[in-house]
Length: 346
Image (cartoon, rainbow, N blue to C red; front, top):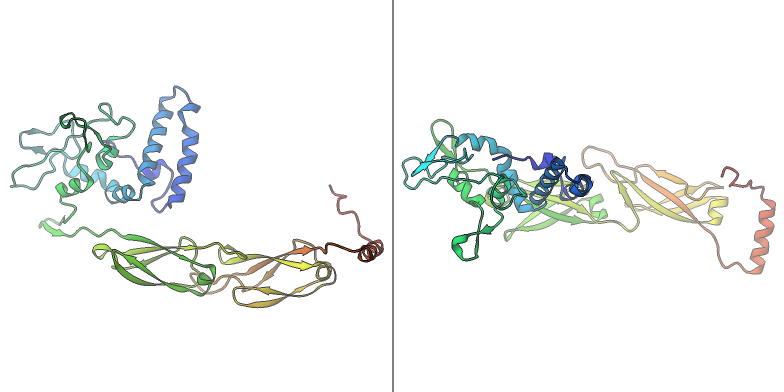
C-alpha cells in the first residue's frame, strides 16, 4: 500500500492553515486539470493525487487522523511485516499483515487491502480508502453499504495504539499522548493593542485565558494540559477588521481628511490613535495623499520590546457649493497663483 504525503502533494508544511490548503488546491487543480492535457496519464494521476490530498486535509477530522498516523505509516508497516493469521498466511504483502490481538489470544485478525488496480474507488489510493473508508456496496447486505475497510479506531485498537504503546524491550506499556484541542478567540484591534482575556468552553469545561498585547491574526496560545484527556488546548487568535485602522505587522495605517485651508496654509490637526488623540503639524502646501509617520503610535510588538508606527495619509477635501461671490474670489486667487501644469509629464 503506497503512502502519499498529502502536505508534500500540495506543496505545504504541516502548519498550513485551512486557507493555505484551499489556495494551494485551487492553484494546483487549475494547473493539472486533465482538460488541459488530454491523454496525459501522468497529469491525470497527479490531478487525482491533488484531489485526494485536498479531500483529507480540508476536513479537520480526517486531517487529525492523518496527522496522528500518516507520517508513521512506514514504521507501522514494518512492525507487522511477515506475520500470519489463524487459518492462512497474509495475502499480497499487506502492510498490516500479522497485526492481531496479541500473542496467546484466540481470534487473531488479518487485514487484507485490495490494490489500486481492482475494485471500487480507483480514484483514491489504498491508503486513503483504508483510513478514510469511503463506503462501497456489500453484496451480502441487500444493497446496504459497509465501510471499505476497518475504521481508524479499529486499526489503532488492533495495533494497541488507541490505549497504550509498548515502550522498551521490557514490554512496559505507556499511554498514547493525547491529541491537542484547537479553539478560536476573536478580538477587536483595541483589545489586541491593550491585551485582553477570554473565556472558552471545551467539552463543558470553562477555561480562562490571557491574550497578550500585540496579538495578531494567527497568534497561537497554548493552555497546557487543559484539553481532552489531559491534552493541550491551542487557541488561535482572530482580530476583527477595524473601521479606521489597517494593520501591517506592528505598524498601523489610517487616512486623515484635511481642509483646503489646512493643505494650503498649514496648521495643527487632531489625529485619533489607539493611544489617544495627538496633534499632527501640517506644513503649508501639503499635497493630497502625503503620508506622515507618527513614531511609536502603532501596535506593541508581541515578542520583545518596542512599538510600531502609525502612518497617516492625508486626503484634501475641497469646498463645494460655492456661491457667486466665493467663485469670483476663487478665480481671483487662482489668477494670482503661479502654478505650473501638473500634466506636463503625461
